[in-house]
Amino acid sequence: MELNLVYVFLGLFALMMGQGFLRRARNPFAEVGYAGLPDVMRAETERVLPGFQHRLARITKQRDSARIQGEYQGEPVTVEAEFDPAGTMVEFEVEGRRGARRLGIAAPEELPEAAAREIERVLGDARAEFQRSTMTHGDAAGEPHFEVRGQAGNWKWEIAVSASGRLLEMEKEKRAR
Image (cartoon, rainbow, N blue to C red; front, side, top):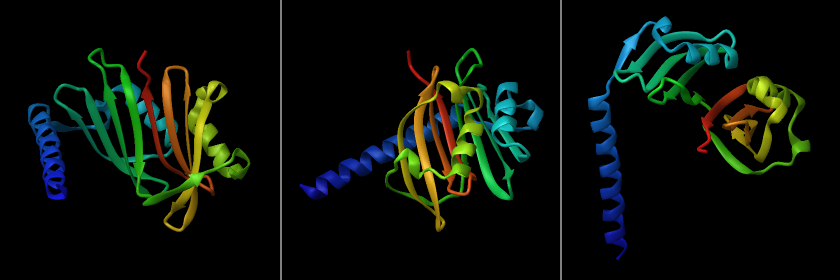
């Protein structure tokens, strides 16, 4: 019985990977100049990551997904965005190398001031209406970090920052209506 479950999971994994490869084969990434990315993606990248140094910019043939690789505060960072058919950004994500592990639920009073300031900065205008749903704490490369999830307006947010106030990861995604 256990062996059958392993085969089922391996089969499902292979199917999902095959679908991803097929989708990319039909809609491949092409390198573009930074200016060739959608304006809304560049604006949000520059707002969230002031001083970001881009190296590689790519966008899919159908212009439904884009990716930028570069450096932010001396660390490698990848920025990804997805767009609907009208060209409206529906997801924005910043990924760094954090190797974090989640340890548990954190109380609001545990959040260091520097981390709270960085979360508010990343939220920007959305901070006034942001409703936190969960906050966890963990460890990222030996440094405490906090991850806050919540919503503001039509967006779901997930922001991970170090205790010292360094942005580790961030994702915002349009909520389904």
